Length: 448
Image (tube, rainbow, N blue to C red; front, side, top):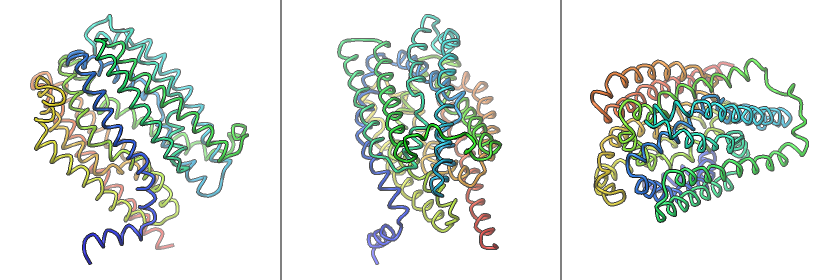
């Protein structure tokens, strides 16, 4: 049997893999087109602002994202786990109660987060933008937080109900509009205000659109009076909110360790260095975009298979998803190593070549994260959210400490290298523990 025939045999026999890939197909098609428009936005925002302004843009956008996630409960994971499992068991009222609680929680948190942005904008402008007069920009762009008032809740409900096509359309619309406004800003010689407006408009389209779709979907899944369901239908409160706070603390660790790198670089070095790092991350994001749809579509399937104790199905799905993500990561790695210098010079200009070195350092860690993208969702699905948290916290504290010590001395590349080391250590340990937990659960099932 040829290799192609073996692939076809696996494809025809694995219903779960086909469902994940089919659902991912909508998002992947959107992501493929979005890559083109994201390149346009990245190129012309860089050219419109130059590298120093691009670093300031990175500080403004990163600060809003950090403030948004600081109080967030990663509510989407809560919805996927508890509402998804309830729907699989036919418990519609419990699923509706989870969705209702998550939506109200996310709305409240988004308003508190924006208040935090307003209060901290002067400090952020001084330390991360190196200019206190930039504070209004931080406040203006911070409007993305209330604009996405129930984005995570909505996205999670659409995922567990298999509603992926509309998500793909909205994601593409966001990319098209953002790229269009950025290109216009470049053509008319506009500055930071219009570039920020472009990203804010795109985020607003996504946030409001997802909320509208999810509310309409909730009416279909739970009935028109779903919002009246009692909170008494929730899972045991200690377990439910324990999972929420654990996820939130995990997200907080990621904020300071992973998502705040541009802020740390701007603070320790300069917005110019931050601009090169932001461009390096933009390059790496092109590798991650094709895999991102698999994250959204596989987590509900992994959670459902584990709830049904279908252990062989879980292992086969993880192996085959890893094979797909490895192929994507390897292909991007070859392209970046062979043609990265030529590509950056052609697309961004030769003066932006210093961004290539940190991109190559980041490629190692983010490549591991790309291949084993299912590491944390697997731990959540088996009910062990604390282990990733402890691992990320210990490794993250070490990374931050080394950053403050080494980055002012050795510069930008050491920050990228530390990030890669962080991913290699944490993901390696989480993958090992996740697979170990699956095997333990399998053994427990077999002994019953």
